[in-house]
Length: 415
Image (cartoon, rainbow, N blue to C red; front, side, top):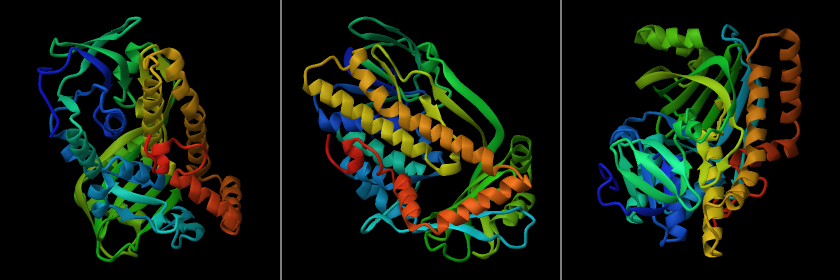
């Protein structure tokens, strides 16, 4: 497994340093080195060794992201543990309602034989990317943070937490929504909190889910059940922050009772597996994605509401776009850290990111309330979309990540 301590054995002069060994940082590293083996790429991560193996969360991987992972040589390892999402049901109701009428259903495939999305455990995804990085000879410096950096005309001088120094042509910040590197670079953000938190956990149930995902729009926020391999589902449960904190702190009996009120008994008895955690929800959009020799990717550039399940897929689109821009520039003999080169990446990603941020913000505000006239209008709208096959096909293609001008990796092509 790739990984070193205290910066020993690394080249003094690198081409790309990536801060953050999550799926975004690892995907960028693997994409770059697979396409340009001569590039010297290092991943630096502040988290202690092995933390990723304890991540009990799961993510929805759109068809385009699965194509990218296949092109990167990771999908064959992930696929046996991935659960295809066959169809999706959307309801709009209250927790106390005896019936939850279905207003909208999605089904079908992104392409023949290709589900529009899969559910994958985060540790399986990260593990596959780490093993691929190891095969390509990419080093991961674990447990050491970037404490500071200075951007000079020809390079970035990086100071690590253990006192070591690095020099690189390009520094990529993929260190999460509260990115320290983004702040160090002086990049401002547009952000606000929703007063909501997302409770995330995994449940086991008696009967099979048949690959169906469900999203129930409740007054406090959406409650999503997402199918996992076997008789298990991932729960993403939005509540007002004070209620979410109270629920997570409750004992198992109370928590599972509240969960059952929302999940229902259609799949038999349910049982929570592993930890349950609550994450505060908000919208964060970086005002700039790049500086001279510096680029943001993934949650460091944008954090959105999970209502559409697109956070991970936005991050993969960043990874694919940034890798393609850097590789093409390097092939042409251009300076990969030059501002005009990095601005190609920014122009490519800005509109998609802002569009998705605004869309999820509007959806959350529209559906996280119990105002009668608003409920009536949104239910009519959902019902109309359900009767329009062309519109539903458009939404399925959007969810699959195959709309628009996608980077080559997301089309399943080599850079």
